[in-house]
Length: 306
Image: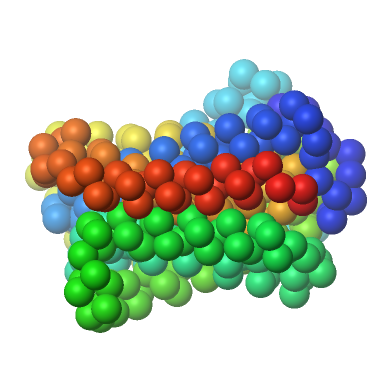
């Protein structure tokens, strides 16, 4: 991936900007799969054990790609405290996501996930004085309205009667951490190769997750895991850890934080689509109208100047 030589508050143009938006579209699709597969895995194993296993695999995958494929020397990074902070934020996010899925549904967690863009915009202003223009904020609101409509399946009474449950409250803590992650990733940038940053960020996350993970693994019968759990762990390790980190790192260096994570508004729509494909039923036409409204908000956001 090319390096963007710019300041913390400058943004990409032309082809670089288009590629950054495509990266985040792919990010949203891959993340959506983690909710459905994570929900399946959470029925059979503790969240701490699942996260420990996925990150052990993720570190291995990132090491092979970095050192063997891309021939990058994985020396100890300068200012390693940066990765300690980033790893902690992502570890909290991952742990709370799986913990929440023990209490609530993938679609409900997808609803909480849509709070991330506006929270991230707030962190970007606080950390880097990165301003979000009113027109961009308006487009995010449009996207949010469509997303909420999708989340609650077009049921006005469900929207008005929304009651935050235990799972949603747990996951909200993780969402706040993830919202801070994107602007910090940009603020902490020191011109290092993306794969170098990716390896050490994943390694730091793994180290934090081992704290609750090792005791959980000791008391977990791994041989009793059904095939779908191992499939979920493999997907989470490769697609939604190694690959999505690279996509987020690429886009966060080229787009404002609010635009980068605005793609989270597509997550509920993708989740509903995936839930239908795996046999959990399809939604009505009115739900897809909400999905189109969300997409429209994102298109407007993408076309507006940064």
